Image (cartoon, rainbow, N blue to C red; front, side, top):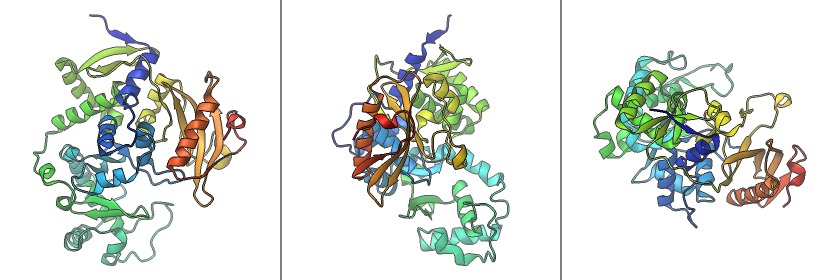
Length: 397
């Protein structure tokens, strides 16, 4: 039997449809809209950088349009809780029903502590867990009295965690604690799982490693539409060997079909429910942490878009800027913009704007419309463009 072939454009449209860019817009996004979008993306990566908007809010905006961010807070903190944070891609919001499927991962962290948690004393772990059980939702600052760090080391910028903070994080990775919410300063608030997760989720049986791997791979395959083994593994940060076993099962069951994608050198797999629309009518910016651009090799293959995050690159060595977002127009990434929300002055700063080779003639006009929409969603009054990049002089507001 011959293997089905897909053009690069077909694979792009399949991928974007799977991610929710074909879904009809709701005039006012509701919790129903949120749930539909979560069903498409599967997880929402969490990141602390707030130069524009925190990472977990952006994929929702890109698919739903301007929405009330309180939808995510309600989904994460109020009954019926729909999402909870865990290491499901990296740090991410995931559907609560995935908690049992993360048990094998939790057990791995418990037995293989890694360099950040090797020094944490077992007695401190027990004291911290008991304290949270006793007092309820707690931040690291609430519990610092449980351990005297003395002169804490400062050699790791951004990672100078106290022993209590390390203990809390380890207990969270092991599933002994869960994240109840975050404060307005983005501090993690921990609590025991039975006060965070719905009772019916905690009552679910723990699947075997193979069963969990199959479910996570199945969700990744639906979210991608079409993908290689590496891309499927990256979605929930799984081992390729485990994904290979799951894919074989899904192929045999008819859930996945092996395909060849134009320009690709590795086998790909098409989900049986994947849609191949004639066109995608998207016009939006994508977060650097959007699932569409998570896996850089896939982004280059499908979109011809070479993308690297330059947050940790010295300013003088950056090519495009600090916080650069791809611009999706139709089914192509046609440009990129370096953005900053200057909340003090109420302006969206466009610190650089660049067209991709072959970008259509109307790219600047379409980008201007999108940036105005984004500014309005962020409650910023003006858009200010700095003269950097070939699109910058063409942007009009």
